[in-house]
Each structure stands twice: as structure tokens, then as C-alpha cells.
Length: 413
Image (cartoon, rainbow, N blue to C red; front, side, top):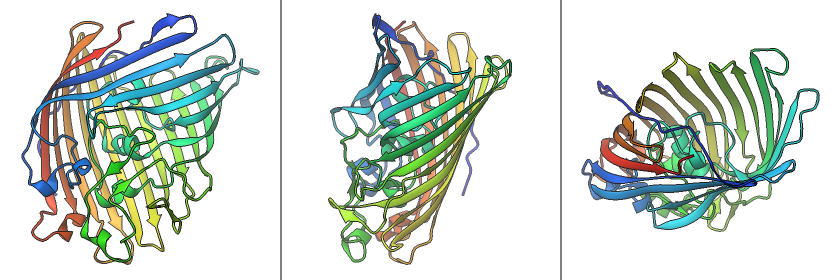
């Protein structure tokens, strides 16, 4: 695959801050809108949400509102609290919905150790990129390929427990946290990666939302003719519980690493509500490093597999990114490089899901005031998706590009 020479810049927004509405209620919010120029594509390469095979979310050049996000934290004077994340999004349709909500339990430390629990719908705390309001990114408008996929298909309805050993209490530079969760409601995860491949965008699927993709010819004939060209990622189909395990390590304020193993434990032979359960499992590693006072590195890596039916789909996938951020007063600059690969291992020759790709993202942002910033972002994506070859004369190898000038608003402190 041809690699582009590049020089990429981005800007991050201010740290997450909440407006205190009352002693027990805090709110933070963020949104963006602006003008985006999109590289022209034939109809079949329009975005997936328009039933195309494109891997960038914007369909046409023009004015567009990005996600408008809100986070509400309810903190009564007790060991319990609650968090709600919601959004309004123009893509794929003008929809208001919830992306997460959960109940926290955080009692006082016991001999210095902190026990935490949460129950509800939420992302596992895998991402070190999506640390801004309502699981957005403070570095770029778009998310990495890993976190774009998480935003589409990863959410769980479950119970999560964690145990932390804070370094400051034990006179140590090291803080450790162990995490374990049992969950349901994420059986179809793996669908989008298998047919469309990885994508780059800032879309988070609402908890009751349907995600569309191209109506591939292989879906119209056996053995895949029961599969619809859409997915509801947060459905429970087989009444089995999945799990994930995690370990966080932090050294002073310089280094943080998070390791996770995820297994939704779905039965790939189950078909109900017009959807298959997909047995999806992966290992994930995130790393954040303060390189200098003004320089920050963020990286994530994921390796996994998904199976549907009697190995009608059997796909290995590997994806990673590296992001570097530099802050200079009211200016911030970031660069991100993503790369991914999918390897088809199933026995259905007419449904080739091999693919690979890479993307370069550049973002520059200037903080006008605590409430407003302006952001310029460039994005180039080069992918090879064999699934496009199901249509005659469609290009397997394709480049996508877009540039955006955005005004970003947020509730000031």
C-alpha cells in the first residue's frame, strides 16, 4: 500500500470541566459545526450509513453540524452517584438519544484501597483518546479507527467492579487498578468491521439506534441471505453473559497504560430479531506518555477475532494508532496515524472480507475563549476492502479525503 508523506497538526480543547448547577448536579456540554470539503466519490463509495462502502462519514461538501454532546453527573451526599451521556447528531439522521448511563458506587477507601462499582450501559474504560465530554476526543474532531469502531459497536449493559491501589497513599510512584465486568447486550459487535472494515469518524451510536451498511450481493444468497444490511449493536440475542478484564497502571503523572481482554461470549449459531449473535473477542492495550511539559503521546493497539454462524464469517483483525499532541499557549497541534488489517478465515469464497488501510489526521485548534475554539482538520484514508469486488468494476483500493473548518463550543467552568 502506498504511504503518503505527511505533516499533521491538531488542537485539543480544554480539559473536561463541569458547570455546577447545584451541590448535587453538574453538567458539561460540547458541540461543533462548520464546513467540510469532501473528495468526490462514486455512489457505491458513499458513506456506510447511506448504504455505501465509504469509510469516512461525510457524504458531500457543505455546512454540517457535528455531534452536540452533554454529560450530567448527579452526586448526592452518599456513596452513590449517577452519570448520563446524551447527544444530538445530524449523521446518520437528526436524532436525540442516550449513549451511556450508569449508577456509581464509591465507598470510602479501606486501608488505602479504593473499591468502585458501576451498573448500567457504558463503554469499558479502554480509550485514552476519548477523554473529553461524553466520550469525545480533546485532540481531534474525528476518532481513531479503534475508537470509531468502539463508538459504533462497543457498549455493554452490565456490572463493573474495580479495585485500586493509589500510589500516593502507599508512598509509591505507581498506581494500580484491576477491573472486571460481566455484561449483556453487545451480541452483534463485529458486524461493521467484517463487511465495511474500519472507519474514521466521530459518530457514537445511540443505545437504541440502527447502523446501516452496504447491501452486499453476498447477503442476498445462502448462506448469508438471512443477514440484513444493518445492525443494532446493543441487542441481547442469546441470553449469555460476556465479560472483560482490565489492568491499569499509572506512574506519577507521566505514564499510563491500560490492558483489557474482552469476550462477549456470544453464541454464533443464534439468529433472532433479524440478527446473528457474533462471538467477538479481543485484546486491547492503551498507552499515554507525557514526553515533555508540552508534548503528549497517546497510542492504542487492538487484536481480535469475530465469528458468526458455522464460521460463515471468521475474521481476524489488528488495528493500532499513534497520536502526538503539542500545546503552545492557546494553540494546540496533533498528528495521528492509524493502520489496520482484516484477515478472512471463513469458507465462503463469494464473501471476501480481507482488508487493510491506513489514515493520517492533522488538526490545529485555537482557543478563542473558555467557551469557543476554532479547529481545522485534514483527514486522508487509504483502504483496500475486498468486499467491494462483489460489484463489477468497483475499486477495491480507494483513497478518501476530507478537510473541515469547525467552530467548537463548550460550557465554560
